[in-house]
Image: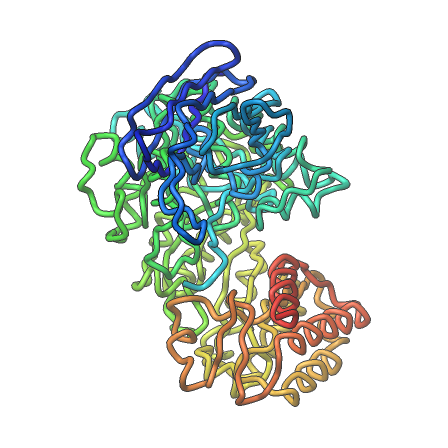
Length: 149
Length: 473
């Protein structure tokens, strides 16, 4: 089933931007670099069910700049704000649990929405279609329609 | 096919939804090919006896996904989506009768757009708004913004949908909260139920739109805020459709889709005469049910009751409160003796009644609660002697943009998060106390062997949940 997966991100640069490749199973469906600072939306076609892999590269040790208090003042990375499947948003708490992040030279899997590392992010899109998947994940669409304005 | 009209499941009822049949007729009259199907009743029939019905209903009304029903919900969405797509219509018109269809609608639209991204979806109906009196179209706008629908129609759709088919997107109500009510209901075509399997409804019944709006101005009511002017079809026009539908579908039961059947007494009296004449001369007689204003005995003389009986009429009476001053102040200008008169007449002429009551109206006191209970105790014998009487009690809600909503200051009302949660220092009765009172009242009716309709369970549940949330804060 053809599906569009949309990543809504905020990009920040330091010595350039992250490089990013997205695979639908083993097929490359997106490749990007030299992103502008700020809002970044990437929509990729995927064939449901599948495993989506985001490969992240171009992060160096010089990209994270700290001040005298060890506070990061500049960094290279992509902050994932929202993930949508055919325009249906995935709730933040659900989205975080889906992100299987593995940093380069590490076997530890974390759930990071800030992608300021070299490595990969795997997202498994299971069930026969997105509707079934949302139901399994208990992912609801927030309307707040019962509330007063 | 140019357009498929389909009701969106969510109204938990076996009654056929009128809109797809009526809109289909409008499209066909304008020269377009169309089909109108009612998935609402079909889905309700599938889930009504499910052991997890309560959980399924919570998905529809609150979008709660209990793990035990996720497969059932998935099946329902896929069934509806695949059925809709199987018609291969150029436009899919989804009709939402109430806001209870909203969550299912958005999941359904998502499924349809996933299977066929090119599907053109148009939604409409009073259910696209959170509350009918609001001009807020945020639900439709959210779906449109997310690409789950293409367009929406707000307000009366009979002419707007034809304009949409003609690509006239500037017609009032299309993708806008500015709409124009239909000026002449008599000019609408008769609904076309050819695509419904009417024999599957329990009982088989034909819905007929006989009027819109209301002649009264009850402060709690949102219908009068949506349809500001009462409009009605003439008796001749309604009766002609009844005969047409009866002959076409061989169904003799009719339900009037309206706020009131007897808004215009002259036309109502004429309609009764026409149905009575028909019933006198035909073996298979017509019957009907409709919302009915209570008036005094002079305005509703015994002769009228004889005709209601002969026409096999059933009446839905908006009593709201049996506390006379409270009822008159909220806009129902009739006396308790008029209620008693209607009960007496219903008993004498064996007219089925459904009494609608609002429990814990903002101006009611705890003394009024006790009075209400006693009122029913005093009338137990009379009520029980009416062959078919049911009471439907709903907890008081302050609906947005109603007269009651605008009287917040006057009544000292402090609103909560949902319409059923509010407080007024005037009578110092909390939401919890009103919920308890409703439960006590329903228990009393059961004890008195007075049939009760539990149409308000979900509203009550929402109120209880919200109240519980507040007390945890």
